[in-house]
Structure formats: C-alpha cells, structure tokens
Length: 232
Figure 1: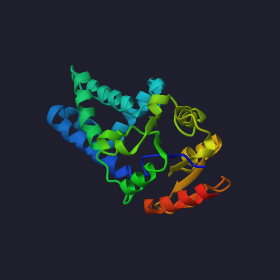
Figure 2 (figure 1 turned 60 degrees about the vertical axis):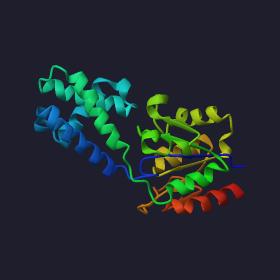
Figure 3 (figure 1 turned 90 degrees about the horizontal axis):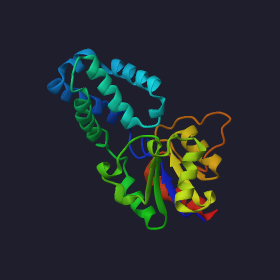
C-alpha cells in the first residue's frame, strides 16, 4: 500500500531554466547599482567559470548550490577589487535567491499536491536549493530534503535512505515523481520505491534503463497514475 509521495522540484513542479535566467538577470541588475565592475567583468560564461573554479577549489561545497553561489559571487567581487566583497556577495545572493524562488508552477501543481496530501505523506527530495516557503507551497509538504542537508545528491542511495529513515516506512510504500531518468527514476528504483516519470517535453526514455511505473506529461495526470500504482 502506498503511504508516501515524494517529488523532485526543479523541472518536475516548475521549469527551472527560465527561473535561473531571471535570477541571474536580477542579480546583475543589482550589481550594476551596487558593484558595477562585476557586471562589466563577468557575463554568464564568466559566472559559470567562477562557479567551476569554486567547485574545484572547494569540493566540500559540491552539493550546496547556495554556498557555491555565494562563494563565486564573492570571488568575482574580490577580483574586481571590492574590499567589502563578503557583505556585497551576501546581499547579491539575497536578490538572486528571491528571484530563484519566484517560480511559475506547472498547471495543476497546487491542486494535485492538496489532493494527495489528504491521503498520503508528501515530501520533496531535490538536488536544488529551492525554498518551499519562499515559493509558497511549504504547507503542502510534510518533509523536505535537499542535497546540501544530506551531503550527497540524487541518485546517491543515502539521499533516498534519508526519506525512508525520516518516515520510518518501507520503500515499497513510496512513489517518487521526478523528471530525471537517472537522478530520480533510477535512484528511487534502486532504493526499492515505485516511480513516476514527469516528462512534459515528451523526451525519449534512455535505452537499457528500466522504465518508471508510469509516465505523465502534465501534473493533471498525476492522481490517476498514483491511483493505478496504489491499486496494484
């Protein structure tokens, strides 16, 4: 019997690429006012290079996207000659993070989560750094784990084990919903969970990989897919 429904967040409940583009834009607009040399020095490519440098230099931050972002901003500001790079970096990150959580939920998200929460525990398991309170849907979840908290990223077994430990329930009582064939579906399958592939762009399933229990293109299809799995 199914008792717990867990969700990936980015590209499962909302599209992430336009959100990150907007967040970078808002951050650079803020920089133009408060630290203009940063925007004059670094474009998107330059920011990505800073990120790669931080990840190489500070591998312990690998799973903490927020700390990586703060560190790369601070590194760039320092190289631009700003003495108060630490303070400025934290202020710039606050602007970035607010925009990063200003997401447009896929149609049906709130209704589906509300309906599922009446019957099941609902959790979020994400490699990203979304803040459910800032997104405005934290009341629809019973628990939330991200890679920064756990110190590993999906599909690592420890990530899914954390959800099992938290609920005290067996893997076969879980359905995990996500967009990524490896991180979400293969990771949850390895833990013994049932799975639903969220595939809004109707991508082709990777050859040789065991399929999810169900595939949906829209969240409106979710309750039906859960009901079928629950009934088996």
